[in-house]
Length: 270
Ligand SMILES: NC(=O)c1ccc[n+]([C@@H]2O[C@H](COP(=O)([O-])OP(=O)(O)OC[C@H]3O[C@@H](n4cnc5c(N)ncnc54)[C@H](OP(=O)(O)O)[C@@H]3O)[C@@H](O)[C@H]2O)c1
Image (cartoon, rainbow, N blue to C red; front, side):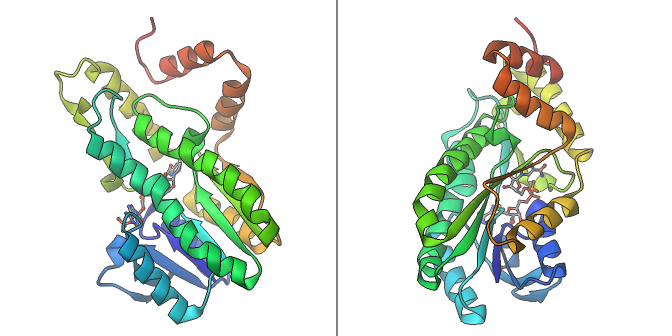
């Protein structure tokens, strides 16, 4: 039994679909499933808002009553708000952190007692290549994914004695994401001093995502991983050039790497 959050669209949808097609029993959670609960092609759909304690409790109660405790929790729910660090409203920062980081913690805390009780389990957190390196105008998202990376390392060490394994998935660009989850901060204002660089950067980000990797392939990789005895610590699922960027980020002096990245996104170099 696998619980997948953020399963109504993008990588969460494709992951739940591939899991179901791979023979796993899936509970698929998302806010869009409010009036559409029940069996579907990607699993048994239940309403879930990962930013809300009561919704997380209700989802857990219903999922347990339906099929018992989960063997695997896969936390795919996430949002992206593009904008300059200076321009984000506090509300935007909170919303990104609440969904992408706190939302995963909220669900993990609900399944851990169940997994400890039954003697083991698997937890898959969704980070991103942005959990390893920053991209301009994705400051809030990058911060949330770095938080996921740090949290998962502590979690892995703590739960390993209980036979619970933890995997962080780090997707590169995939062509699945829905534009309704790509919000824009106030940098969309032509009066913003960041406007010109921001427009060039988001055009490149849009282009890379539209031409990104196959989401079903990612779903199949995660499905195979959760079917093994223990999860790998991390799954970097990205194109060769994005994997190279991760390597260069590790090897090159920070300022040099950031100049290369700024050039790539068409920003101004100083
Ligand atoms: N696509 C990529 O290229 C890419 C790259 C790196 C990492 N990722 C990560 O992969 C995950 C999926 O992203 P995506 O771009 O593929 O999908 P997406 O199309 O942006 O879909 C986002 C999903 O998250 C759900 N969601 C948002 N807020 C939620 C909330 N409060 N409670 C429950 N569910 C919520 C949405 O469902 P509802 O609105 O129905 O709730 C939807 O199913 C995210 O964690 C993202 O950071 C994606």
